[in-house]
Length: 192
View 1 (tube, helix red, strand yellow):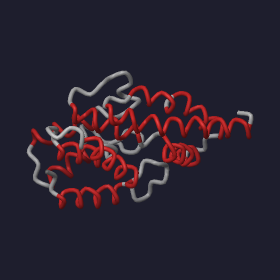
View 2 (spheres, helix red, strand yellow):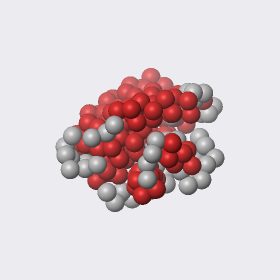
View 3 (cartoon, one colour):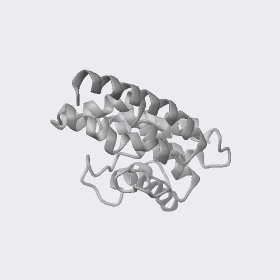
């Protein structure tokens, strides 16, 4: 069982770290990933729910697109400040390092906890929220509409078939269908 005060501390920590971020990699994203992970983890009662919760919450605190840290310095700092052992920190950081799409393309995490967190993050990249995040990121980084649409074909439409758990596959199917419908309408209107 996860200590709720640690989760409260984690929320405060990520809200501070991501305070100036408006490109879809923000505290709200991490909190959604946390909730996705807890939903998936319900089907795996023997997994380590605390590790899942913290890896999900902290999965972007050292993202190379956002921070110039090494060896998960931000995640380790939070975990150390909250009394975690070096072994427990390593376990959580190993999962965090298995989440990134660009760094782990084609790789499946070694643990069920890692698979759950990776699925939870990928679920937040698709569906309605994935569409919103794509255009928020595109706007923040001066991407054209066509460039943002390309991102769907290069990454987001691939994620449904890359889910690790059955629970995530079912959730991804609905979100994927919504994205396909959105892209159909967008392409009809814009001729992209």
